[in-house]
Length: 162
Image 1 (cartoon, helix red, strand yellow):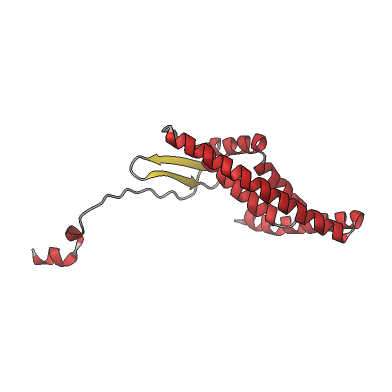
Image 2 (cartoon, helix red, strand yellow):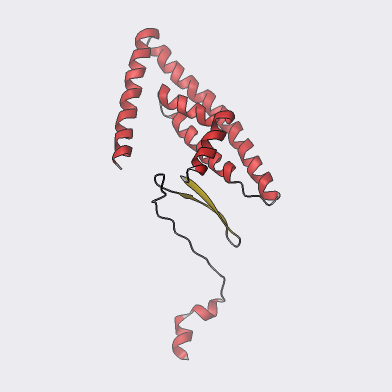
């Protein structure tokens, strides 16, 4: 929790310092234009990469395989979108790392290998993605099953009449 708090304080401060430094070298309007340009270019790449990942996941599902890597890559692409819309060069750089397939693939494989994101298969309900905290997976994972029953057997008044 403290690391997350430190992250949300440190990253904006570093972003502002870097923006001020760049603005001092190239000017304020050029810096704003560069930040807007990276966001626009990033969103265009985001659309293409997201669609490609979705199509790969669909192909794997059609062949009966679990699209674990594609699911994690999809989450990284979503995170990239949020990072690219956040003004700043550090978040843009990290967002572009998540959008670049040769870099995103190893990041996704590392996250799956470390158990940070585990993908579990349930034959009846499909697949689920669980986010775990830390390398030991100390997060809460809730599992369950369901089955369909006729509505008459669940009514309390029917059980009271017996």
